[in-house]
Amino acid sequence: MKYKILEKPGCEDAYDLIQDALRKKATIIIFACCKVSYEGRALSELNWGERIIMIKPDGAFLIHQEKKVEPVNWQPPKSRTRAYIKNDNLFLESHRRSPKELLTVEVKKVQFISYANMEDYEELEQAGYEKDMSDMIMEKPHMIEEGFTPTTREYSVEHGFIDILGKDSDNNLMILELKARKAGVTAVKQLRRYIQDMENTDNDYLREVNAEKKKIRGLLVAPSIMDDALELIEEEGIEFVSVEPPRELKRDKKVTLDFF
Amino acid sequence: MKYKILEKPGCEDAYDLIQDALRKKATIIIFACCKVSYEGRALSELNWGERIIMIKPDGAFLIHQEKKVEPVNWQPPKSRTRAYIKNDNLFLESHRRSPKELLTVEVKKVQFISYANMEDYEELEQAGYEKDMSDMIMEKPHMIEEGFTPTTREYSVEHGFIDILGKDSDNNLMILELKARKAGVTAVKQLRRYIQDMENTDNDYLREVNAEKKKIRGLLVAPSIMDDALELIEEEGIEFVSVEPPRELKRDKKVTLDFF
DNA sequence: GTGTAAATTTCGATA
DNA sequence: TATCGAAGTTTACAC
Image (cartoon, rainbow over all chains, first blue to last red; front, side):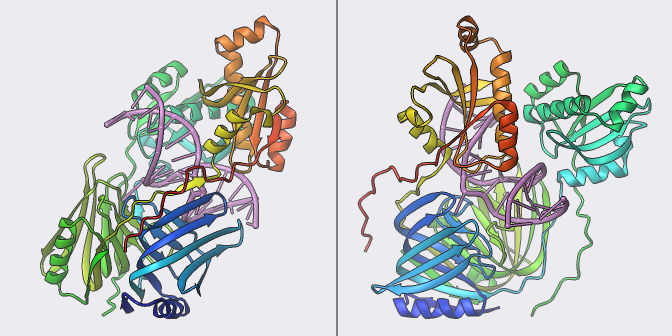
């Protein structure tokens, strides 16, 4: 990792370091007293105070106060960063084209500034999401119930997409709504709308259901369910099936790169 | 701003500095090669690579790669941070009680580490949001139309909350759905559901509408509207009113504190 | 603490 | 480029 640090630099030294870092596509960290204004999708002002400024080589620009996970102000990747000196003060600007957004930082006092080119070829491997649940159910449909046969994923209806559509052993139509976390009333209402959509819209499934005088079953599939959602489910004649999202990291571990 | 920097520290020096910083409730920044694992609401692994680690005094813990606005891994405020040495390697752990979540960072090579106590007494002033629009309409209802009288905000119905409920000059019931950004079909559907909710649920407003043989008018209030949403509005007999979210920062600027 | 809705949501996939 | 939906969403606010 190539890096550089400057402690309590003057305005021009800080400016030079930033220009250097931007050219080298390095990640920049600045501890400084600054004032921030933003105009774009919304509008904001942040008066003088000490913060951490982070500028990434992909154009992302973040200003962090000493609280919260979220930055107090930011600009997304692909934004254009510019530094300049005006009235002996250092300014940083981050500009986005579409939608038009401008972030302006006036820097009063830099405590220290640093940049580094970071070598990182790894991506996050993760599991435990709705998609993982869906994959798992498509592979092992019997975990929903014996005889369940999934037919379609992401089936488009008026109010959205049905996660999994399928049939039970009696050829009844099954509509599955998956949630990777505890399901609330929102999930039940969503499923209810999908069932209505299937009932109200002309489609092959509905025709088959009507021809064979079969039922449409709605199933909410989640690790657990909130009390009020459970009540609603019983009123609506919807079923709840408890399924934990899979907790296995699927991608093979890549060979660890040894950078040193 | 009190701060400290250590370049290429050994494992124990880095450990000592972190302990020092945690005691002093300082914000910590580390440029290092690390490996991350997370287990909690989901599950993830991130193999060896160079990243920036940020630990805030409120317990927030962030790991940033050189891309994206969002951290690759994180822990929310109030998490408990712990540092320890095992097999001559530095480990950082961030633990959250409820929901139970654990983030573990194995640090191989610290390029530099720093901490600072930041003085920042300012909060972000902002404008241009749905709430600002709502405030403005309550203050100047004539901007919706001449004779409009708002009665209730955040009126609870089956499928959510009606932003503003009111009456026009003919005593017809008006249901306003506000959007601070360009309104899409989702907003129209939302409003349509609220109108249905008002029509189907017994309430004082409905009784009055029925008694006086008045109408229920649905209004979508937003700066602009997407084409497909406009079509849907016309089909549904809903009205669209163009209102820009206010772009004035309301709070008086505080006196600038001079820290130095 | 729980639940609900907004957010400069971000981010990825897709048409 | 715009839209759509998930997210370890986060955050604020009401209950």
